[in-house]
Amino acid sequence: MGWPSAVGPTDKPSSFLKKLQQGHPLPTPTANSIVALMDQNLWTAVDQYLADHLVTPDAHLDQALAANATAGLPSIDVSPTQGKFLHLIARIHGARRVLEIGTLGGYSTLWLARALPPDGQLVTLELNPKHAVVAASNLQRAGLSSLVEIRVGPALDSLASLHAEHPEPFDLIFIDADKPNNPNYLDWALKLARPGTVILTDNVIRDGAIIRSDSTDPSVLGTRALFDKIAAHPRLDATAIQTVGVKGYDGFALAIVKP
Ligand SMILES: C[S@@+](CC[C@H](N)C(=O)[O-])C[C@H]1O[C@@H](n2cnc3c(N)ncnc32)[C@H](O)[C@@H]1O
Image 1 (cartoon, protein in one colour):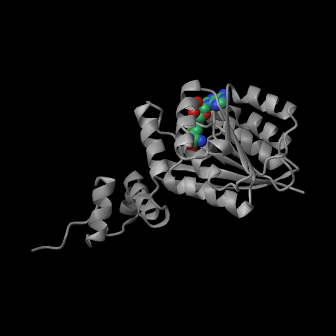
Image 2 (cartoon, helix red, strand yellow):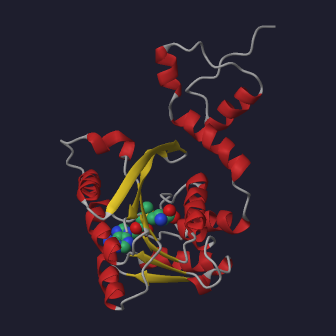
Image 3 (cartoon, protein in one colour):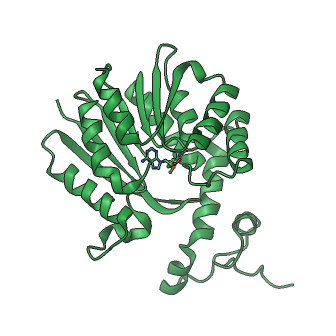
């Protein structure tokens, strides 16, 4: 009987994790094999491990993802570990009022709304009426409808109407819609913020394409313009974190509005 064979980058994520747990070794760590292993299978397996340990199984969150899939929504919501990350940031910050730009089926909305106190409010903006209907149903099933208002239409229009209503400033703003508009969303976020407001933007790394100054991809261009704007803005202090996981290689920008 020989040693168990080494796990490899071609293993499916589930068998990759299972084999590691059964004691199958990683391949001899040459530079090439380490690079080869740092691929989607490993990121997914580690994300599953983290979710298994840190994200309590939750029927409403699972049902929301299932309902999104049944309705044919794209699977571009945040991952469970990322949703928990957003939830914890909102709780750590003591957020009472949250603005979300880009609802989809409301998966991140559920995570954020659950961080709110009973008198909290979350306003989420969605272009696609079909997405909004699915999100509303997911939020209702989770008992969160009273905390969440979904506004349907182009977010730039919704933001202008919202601003005209002179709302109480938002404590946390999550930007996750059409990426070419990221710099415009940041402008609106600042108008709807107060000193101390946290502004999070998703998908700012884009498989590393963010560093490509020759990119013609509108999402990369929009996100590069976002970073330029954040970096030059006198009212913002910010960082960004690269992430890997079930959703691939991407990241969040995190900014706070200065006093
Ligand atoms: C990445 S998804 C949002 C994912 C969601 N935040 C989550 O993690 O569950 C982006 C959403 O933004 C919406 N969207 C795209 N362009 C928009 C616009 N101009 N105004 C408002 N929403 C828009 C899309 O229809 C899509 O549902």
